[in-house]
Length: 60
Image 1: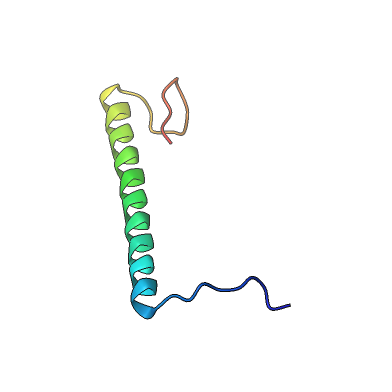
Image 2: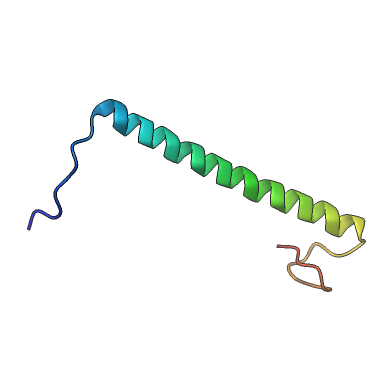
């Protein structure tokens, strides 16, 4: 079987979709990194350990 029919997409549209997907991936990685950094700073300021999920504050 050939599979589902493809929607004809021009090269410009394909490049645009790839650029949008790459931008979303970079944004997600940046948000994850910022979350980890802020959480580590909060745990360090509270005097807690940086181990994962110990002592009531999650260090993940």
